[in-house]
Image (cartoon, rainbow, N blue to C red; front, side, top):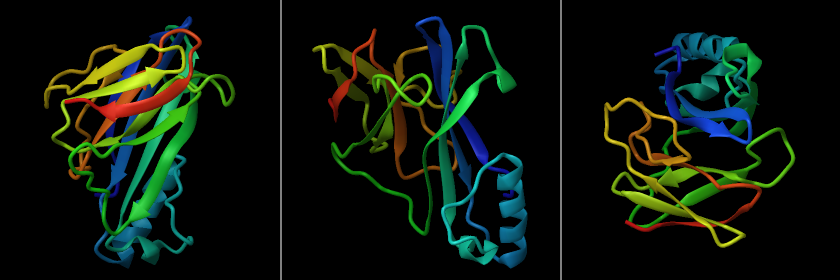
Length: 186
């Protein structure tokens, strides 16, 4: 319960670099002692929950962190530069329905550059997301089978451990184009 459940949502290579996105979910602590242990475990990972700062604020609340990593092709672990894409500490995780989608475009590399990486949430029933680039290109993210090994890809919809109300999706636009829009297509 104290260590976050980590899911490698997607990874791949692009433009001579290696990239990856993971989602870390911390279960809701039941009491102050559990909240203190969880706060310390998060700090050990370099994470800070989205609360005013008192461990008691975590009681009954789930924390999640979406992290993008990037580095030269073939790099791993400490060689990768990490950036927080999104995080929250909440009593109730988002529960999208129908074709609801939340998309968070990001630069794939560094902090600047075209927003080629799109990370977001969709309903657990979504089977495909289309990410559209400003150059007219479309990248399709398909639902990955549960309990199936992740493979290098530029687009996927995986399930995330301990995040049961939605699935996350990841798309990387081809070349230098930037994100324009995303939609659930199936």
